[in-house]
Length: 168
Figure (cartoon, rainbow, N blue to C red):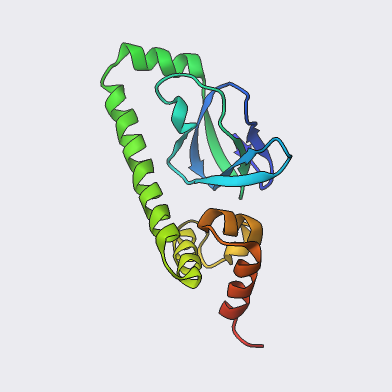
């Protein structure tokens, strides 16, 4: 299936199939009781989601929204869990998927633990270049989302982005 930028794949609290992202980018946002949204994850090509449902079914933790046109394979939950039960070696594949995700999270922790806000933003921009090329980070995420992802206030992100732009 093809999902275009801004389209929703699944919503927080629903249950359903798993998905494999072949191309594109997805964001996972959590909706809080007050109506505010918080960016909690970026899904990159090669990932199967939701991560917390790879071994047993669970409701979706957040809402998945396409950040760019994305190609996604639908993995029916019943088939996924049946094949997992029939072939215990598949658990190794799930473990490897989760290991890859942990590596990405370690990179994100590196971004969050930088002492300088400018370094946090630079590391995020470098990481995103892998997936969006030379396009500006702000073509994919809002300043608010960038701030949520690296632990900065939106105003700080705005100031840092202005400093990074070449003078006109």
